[in-house]
Length: 375
Image (tube, rainbow, N blue to C red; front, side, top):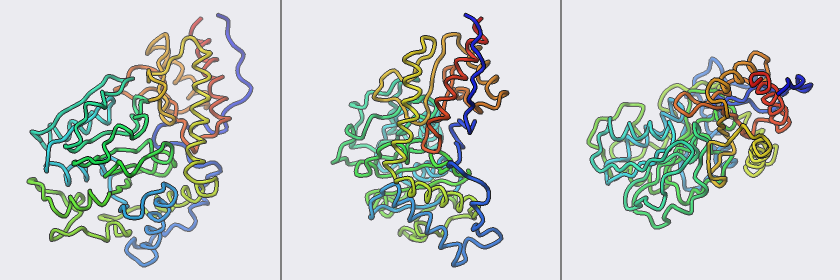
């Protein structure tokens, strides 16, 4: 193979990290000029901005009116662990794992909470567990989109509408890009540094009426740290879902999230965000189809992520690392190596804040780099 000519067009943004992901198009620090820096988050103005973030989340994500939305500490991890520590133990639990973050929740429940009624349904990277084996008389914990494998559940059809247990869904790289059927979900968590490119350290926790009822009728047998407590005297702490955060949030990060949500509204809302992610992922699909040495890690097209697109390459780890290193040095693509626990390859973020033209340009640079190292 001969060297390919260096591509003439570079991505306008080289940020293809899967989290924190690319900022919204046209973002500059000036967009945060309204942030309440130096002010208390408990002031009337601070609470108003937090309430604004919650209201926009409900509007853009199309969250049902009777679901609760809270801004919580410690990113998506904090939101998931609040749910696990507060809600589990009332009945048996099915845990689904097919990539690193799902494996993490298995570890929390089996090794830390030590729930004896736990059942783990696992699949290797690239596949899903057999969803037909899930028992909805039990609680169910799963990731909607496997950020480290590029494998997502295809829809919510497999979830029983008449379930007895709760469904606890880590939706951190699916929210705002994939169709979440809230009627099938009792707990939804995400971190806003994923699809909308917000700054880190904060999580969002969404509870159905069924989940809220569990909180008020069940007390777990283990002690709960302060940052996990959502009830007082057997009643839900309503303020948590009205902008009264458990600990001090960054008002800069809150403002950044509001700016991203307002951008989302301006470009057409949820369907537009999903369409942008779909268009970006389609670029990679077409490239893989015409590229004999690149392959989707997700084997089934119906379960391929449109955000965290994971690829394996003929040439293995050495080639993948060489391509990622070279494109970073060129200022063309940052942070596109596979996750540390995943099979070697590339992971390209295709969420809504990425421009399709940048993904197109990136594929040409990957071709260039592969030719460079395959001679």
